[in-house]
Image (tube, rainbow, N blue to C red; front, top):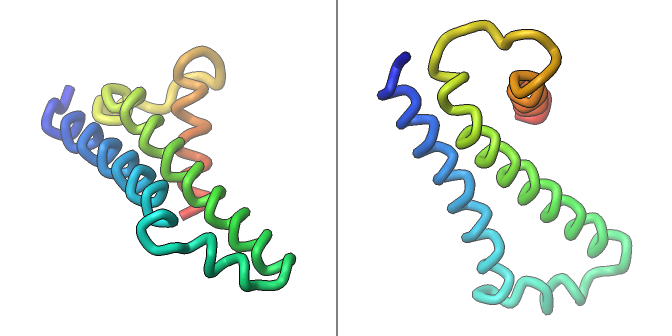
Length: 99
């Protein structure tokens, strides 16, 4: 098992979660929602949906990278489509499709 790669994956996971925390603090620091209130209803809702989607993607990638760091670093195939490794397969597949 490659412990350096596992550590790098866990650091990447913390970075993803740090971006989520920064994104959660940004609206208060910049007055984002008061500026967003000036928009028409559709663009305002669209912006909030995109904002939530990006936050949830970052959170799920960070959580998945942390939980499955050992499996990802081991270099083994993604295993059968059931059990704990099924989550790893889904995580990698989702990440590939989104980014």
